[in-house]
Image 1 (spheres, rainbow, N blue to C red):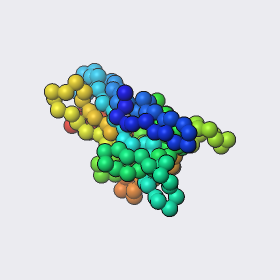
Image 2 (image 1 turned 60 degrees about the vertical axis):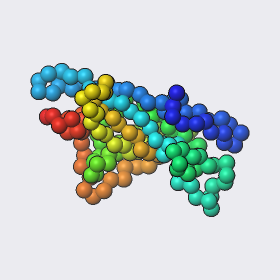
Image 3 (image 1 turned 180 degrees about the horizontal axis):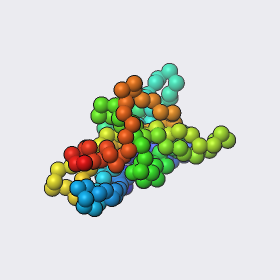
Length: 170
């Protein structure tokens, strides 16, 4: 079960089972030893909501989560259904790093005649304590249709390189 309450919007019930936490496995060679890295992945409500704007949103758009007022977005919701699969592709992908914020851009197909769309995923990655069953925690802060937006100082990394950096190994 996910951490999000269901949403009734325009006569349809939206559920969030697809955004329940998942654990991903990543095989790495660290110091010439094969290691299985376990990554605990959680998702934020910004993956299916946008900033609430009273000039364009009505009461039915309201979505509250952890004291935050947001606007439910059906397109972001539709895209969020791809997140469990996209997180698997992230493991072998390129990410962009700016300070402690990371971005990964995938291509997803949604109901659109124009083909795949760039889907930007914004996330954080941190090391877990040694007493945990997982090595890293990845939190997807937000995700929406958008081409890459990276700062001028952004660095391009392989996700596996980022994992090694966060773990403090080479």
